[in-house]
Picture 1: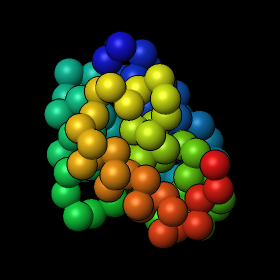
Picture 2 (picture 1 turned 45 degrees about the vertical axis):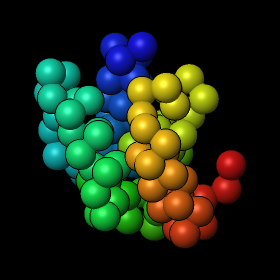
Picture 3 (picture 1 turned 90 degrees about the vertical axis):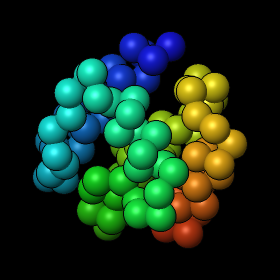
Picture 4 (picture 1 turned 180 degrees about the vertical axis):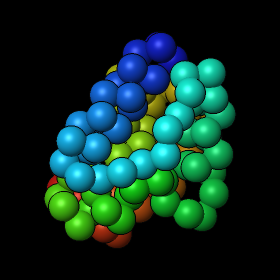
Length: 93
């Protein structure tokens, strides 16, 4: 399941880049560690605000973390943080 998540996150980042939202590169080996770190902290993920400004939050780490197919990869706290950030930014599901 982690491999699918990493592939989905990579694809989302590539789509975001094509829409003009630049995010830092991420190696597959560090992807899960980085995702857990970003979702457990108080800061939004890389590019979150730029994605929000363009109406592309569906491409954010937070959106992937609350996607039904990936929720088992994250703790309740991480998922709640992701959901809260999305809702506060006005994301519609």
